[in-house]
Length: 298
Image (tube, rainbow, N blue to C red; front, side):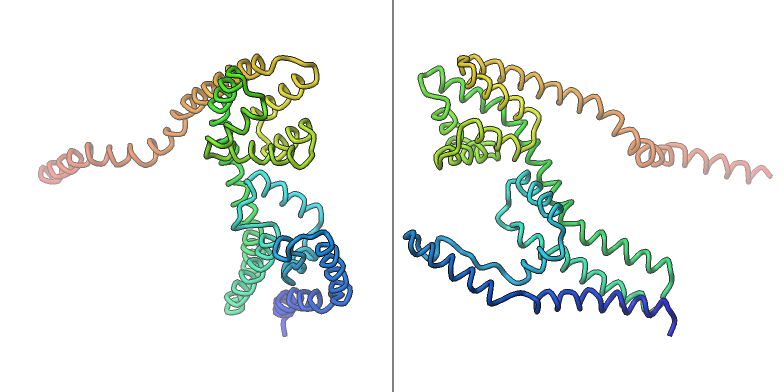
């Protein structure tokens, strides 16, 4: 058998063997002992059995085994930036990535076996890598859209909080009002920050955690200003007024920047899609008449 065929067979057998070994090698007795200890601790604390779940699917454990820890932390940050969608938790993402890559690799190899070639082998590797990284691309795009939505909502939310503070409410009460009246991702982040403070986290840590989760330059600037005002005793109303003005200026500058980029983006579709058709419609009949007259005179 050719070495290339042996290589293809090894690529099929090796991942399946590793997955089976990962499932068999789990220390189920130790895992059951850990779950039993956690269950007794939860029971002694008076928490209901449905409120805390210590079970994790076996495929999730396999996904964590085959994924480097640093990469898992990076994926967790991506999910936090995307708002941690309920339809795609971290364990499900870790199961989805190797499963999608394995399925695509097997299908690609089955197609490649009909006509094996080095170029086809490189194509299989490329398609498998793309299938493995596709969930990351989707999560990253959702996080980028969420950052844009937060930057767009921030000036209006700061105006609402400024009105509440000037009406006599405290800063946390103003945040609660903005969170309750809002519907976008910024309102959800403000609500989570208030929950962090309610469970005992300091205000500074809660604000910094919100800025780290969202990873937006506008929100980081606002958080730094609020932390400094809380540290040095500056009036929060003046900080909110200044920050709301700056955020409106930044939002207008971003809109102007997009408007200036628009002619450049329109140039290529205009050159390659619209102008050729327009020239064909205008010049085509005249060219046909000229050719007919030239052929008739000959």
